[in-house]
Image (cartoon, rainbow, N blue to C red; front, side, top):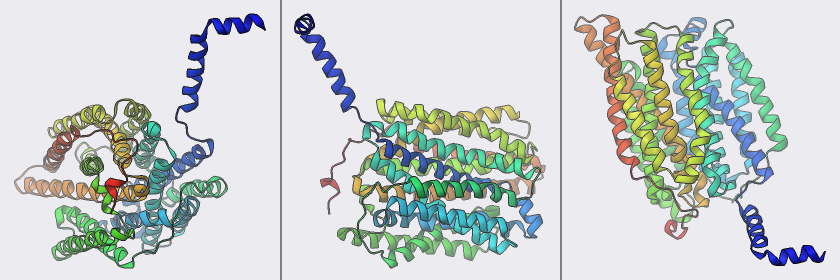
Length: 504
């Protein structure tokens, strides 16, 4: 006893060092086990609903044959889904403040499961469209719920690596959707797409009922009905108009309907913004726009919109090129695009850790440059381009996007105060939907117009389509330059954004 005491007294520095290390370990930010369980459950559920968003993409031809509808009608399976997402997501800011985590999760997964069941047993096309609307209602709620819960539970020092897990969900699920769909449709009827997803959704719902706990605070507030109506016409009108403009270069429907939808969307959106500015003075806004008082959030949203527009446009254009110019079948196309999505998922956790250590700029700058370089390279594709070069380009672009998405999510939402997390998440989801619709519409319209022009000039169908693809990818490459310029201004937000700066 005496010798031990003497040794300790003779080595005060060692004792002090040991105590300091123990104190540092105790003070290190950690996520409570209960909170970790909630986050992982939400991640798994979000993976399922996002997987469903793209699993239908290669099933359209079979549905047209089985349900006896034309291509314009069949596109409503995607258009109705996007419209519902655009209408519901802005409302989630209110829902996440008014109701508990558990209530919102159960509502989202119940809607998704009901929609999936309805789709699986639909006797005709009309009910199948309704089923997709019900599915989209649940899907629209899940991602903002996940983002808001994560920002509430995870300490700022750990948000990058945790948001990396969200990026896995967002990148891998859409990538594997078409591949899974192609495998199913090779041997089974289209209903099996929903019959396979349904039990997974029901299991996630039951697990959530048992284990998801209330982890956020709620406050009683009334929903502003006028804001909901203006939001529906504003975002819905924009997305619908953009989807029409992308249909055969805008020739897929009435020009009056196209421009009328866009005009209604713009006017309703302007009225919606004015309404929110008035309501947020009393903390009653459906979508609180004070989030945009943060320059970091605003820049992150802008870069996300640009990146999403380019990404969704390319996701549509590349399969058209692979199938109509290089003549790959549906399954081969899905398999070729799969490695890029899987790579995004694999590197996302590492990107998150790098964000925690170095901040967003060292990741977003090279990521945006990489994406832009690939898009400029793809403007040179032709009817004789080797398939492996397209594969390399897609994998490289996916790596660049992986370097961008996690830092943009984390920095953007981290720059707003906690009481606005739900509104920031809803704005992020809304911008993704509108940006994706805009990118798809723009690139498909350019592709269609250029293809028609070259065909009229005497070019073969393959050569004309390749020319249309080059023109569309040129537009995406130009758009990407804005992301490169903006990336140099990204920085990491303070751990605790000032509430004073966001006051009335």
